[in-house]
Length: 362
Ligand code: NAD
Ligand code: IPM
Ligand code: MN
Image (spheres, helix red, strand yellow):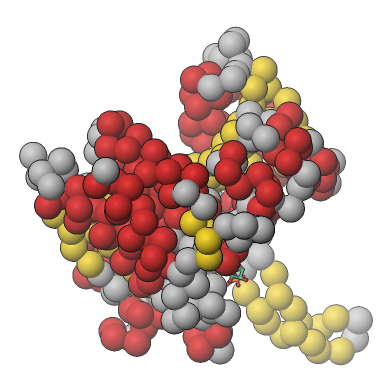
């Protein structure tokens, strides 16, 4: 049956990188290898500009009808002074929430060709293959109460800002199950990251991890405080197999892990609901500093297409082909600026996408 893929280019470099990923999908469709149709909808600042809101109703409807979604990136300085509800970030958080995409998988894998682009010594990152499982629809991102209000503080009135980090037992249990299932299929090591030495919400998180762990005798569960986890990721990242953590900690740790692989421009992600429906997106943002200059690395988005084909469309062979094409292009020495090193060939976003297509055609 023909599958529906919804493209959400968004803002900044979003349209540039999604264009290259779209070319890959179109090639697979036009050559008869993939039975799918592509649609496009608005999100983020693009939604605000065209429809006055960062997540138009129609986008949600189209997303619900789609089999899989590929998102570029949202946000930009132009929108940073808008009321919070109208900001592009609300569009992204809104679609994650509307679709119930609670499980965010962020693999950090080093392509051996990029060892020189990592900010760590090659021997520390050679062979790195780490999976961060980030809870995506709870925690401090969505907890109530939240707000800014004027209160009396030590005898005078001033503004106070507050958010609430909250997790229920069932929210913890369902993300733990996802993480344990993944760890069981990999090297059988799961590290849960929290701040249980300070936060009650983390105490419950740790208890939830232990409880779910009872059903996974083949997975070795360990715990780290988030400050130590950040340090360990930079000290000796290969000690980790799968990490599971809350929304905010996962956001921070995945950007940190990105740099181990050479650039945040290399990291794809997948977000799933309870039925396994997926939204795929690069881990990075709209990169306003390089937007519109044909400089963005499209590989994180193209690797997100690889994940989409593998996990939602069950097209493992096509997914493997995309991975091989990316490997070939890196073997040939093509590099966008973010992963450039001595002796390599500097290319822009479009040329990088064209090289991936050329490799796919071979
Ligand atoms: P960012 O990820 O957009 O950029 C951080 C740095 O990484 C920049 O120097 C940028 O040029 C570089 N970079 C990012 N992607 C790249 C790519 N594909 N190729 C080469 N270099 C790349 O983070 P930021 O600057 O903190 O945020 C910018 C905007 O993006 C903000 O509005 C933020 O809210 C938004 N944002 C969106 C997402 C998302 O859509 N999922 C994620 C993070 C940030
Ligand atoms: C990400 C981004 C988003 C997040 C922002 C833009 C809302 O940083 O996808 O990592 O914090 O989840
Ligand atoms: Mn982030």
